[in-house]
Amino acid sequence: MKKKSLVIIIVIAAVLLIAGLFIGGYNGLVNLEAKTDTAFANVQVQLQRRLDLIPNLVNTVKGYAAHETEVYTAVSDARARLAGAATVDEVNSADGELSSALSRLLAISESYPELKANENFLSLQDELAGTENRIGVARKDYNDVVQVYNVKIRSFPTNIFAGMLGFEKKELFAADEGAQSVPSVDFD
Image 1 (spheres, helix red, strand yellow):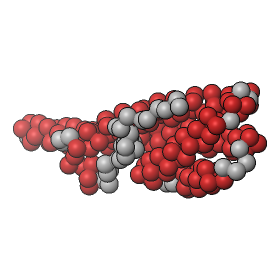
Image 2 (cartoon, rainbow, N blue to C red):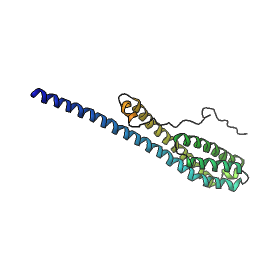
Image 3 (cartoon, rainbow, N blue to C red):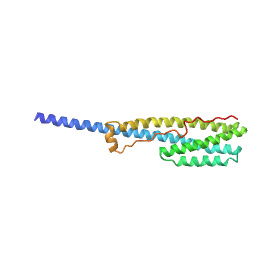
Image 4 (cartoon, helix red, strand yellow):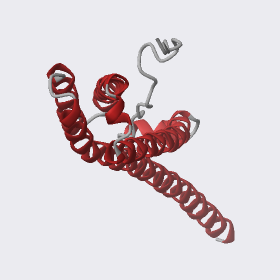
């Protein structure tokens, strides 16, 4: 009788240990997935901050360079695509388009010395530069937590139940195509 009780206790302890490991692993994955979602939301907050600054910047530049409609249209279209982006890939692509359009918008200031001296323009340009830095930090934070999450769901033994429970690999933010090329700076 004592042997039977000991076996039952050992089986119950093993089942509880396995259940505890499973529950702990699952809760850990849920926590990491929530962190990735929060980090992505933080990126979106910074992108929204940039989207909110852009109309003011565009209106300031328009006052000096009314005939640059192609650039304004490109900024507006890219801004709309970024505002409607839902996935990491869509955000990444739309953000690249917007960054390119903003670069062209800011390049207009080279042709208008009085614009470069405008207090509103300088203030908006500083705000935009600060926002770009915040976006970079938020992307890095997102990529860091996604890297931890992706490693976790692919590591043994977590990978066994991660797939069964629907935990899927998250996409990282990547550099825009051509980001490795050295930009051309011309002061002529």
